[in-house]
Length: 282
Ligand code: PAF
Image (cartoon, rainbow, N blue to C red; front, side):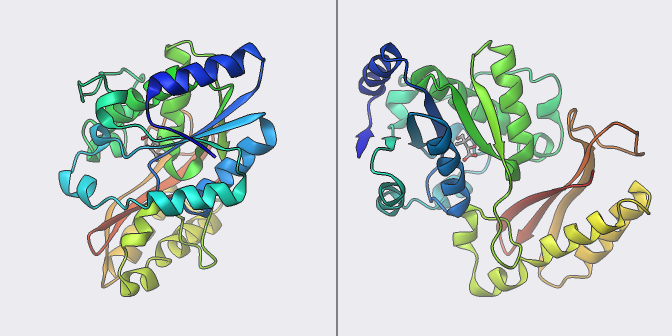
């Protein structure tokens, strides 16, 4: 398995693949790989001649230094999991200094308002950090297709906007949320849950699933109140926000308009671990 650390080495390798007209699939990650990541990689292996997986905990997208420090790092296990899947996967695991050319800071983006909703309000600067690193990675890897999970649905929409505004010929492929058997959305952060918090975290998806059943009969306001009450009555989970938004604009919806698609978006703290999830309604 090839593991690249220096962007100049990977760029040279990619140049050769491009000369041979090979199709390149790309899965950007921050490591601590779980089945959800592996599902993205499997999709890429199926569609492309070569798959590049990046493993890089990007400092500029963390608004909370503690979160950055505590973010799980399991590099050797990650490599092993990828090797087991396919020994021809190409791993890119840069040092911050190298990929950022010594200047570790974000570019500022205008994602036409997508960055201002939900996570944008609660994690200032987060999407500038994501946009900065994904743009850098795309320029190095030059993939034909790049794979993103729907768990971070707002990020997925922002990446689609990024390739549009930067004119990058990359197809963004969304991949459905991968869940544990009990419904908890897979996330690298789940590794940090205490056994108690892990036991009650599936409640989040139970509540979301209820809202999906309510969708055809209830008004948006009623559904939002239901989630608020359910979360407030839970002794250990703290709701940060629940929003029902238009899938395209991500703007909060007050009423259902025919032809539009809607999703419920939730962020909940289990102890001090921030868990994010969403569900499609129509
Ligand atoms: O979703 C993630 O893991 C990260 O935001 C990404 C896309 C790898 C950028 O650092």
